[in-house]
Amino acid sequence: MVWLIVAVVIVVVLAVGVWLMQQNKSRSLQQRFGPEYDRVVEKEGDRRRAEAALSELAERRDALEITDLDPDTRRAYAEEWHAVQERFIDEPRQTVADADALVQRVMADRGYPVDELDDRIDMVAVDHPELAENYRAAHAIQVRSDDEVSTDDLRDAFRRYRELFAELLAESTPTVDHDHDDTDDHDHDDEHEPVEDQEELPERGGR
Image (cartoon, helix red, strand yellow):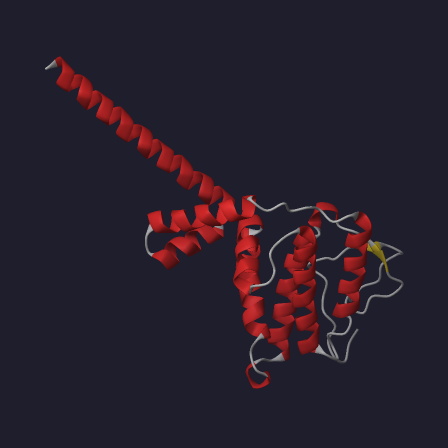
């Protein structure tokens, strides 16, 4: 009888241990993936399958050696971004394509896989989960045909790309000198401007 009680206690302890481990795993994945956790759970329709998929994704990311960009490279990228942004009024579709290309180049320079869109989005989902849906939405707008997309849609896509681009440079956001910036509606008293998410895109007929 004593051995039976001991066996039952051991089983209960093991069961509680497994449950606690699963809870800790779930909590860790929720903290790491943020809104992406809920999205994958909804997509999979099963929490266990979703967590298995997220765990595998986290392992893929952790196997990569992601490096910071040196200050000169970051500054050059910021300058290039501003030059691209200033062309939006005349070439909105090409500007969005250039924004996507810049995001890919920064990711590649930092060590992310960039050959496939799904891989890029997966890596963003791990390191910047709050921006993964932005990336999906921006790309979805970009690939629409001309008769399906408006200038406002392209403006929205560009802003989404800009937010991700700024985050990818955020380890040490470079500053760039501008005597005049057509993308902003107010003057700057010789300030240095980083790539800012809140910068306004130019509109035809205004600055």
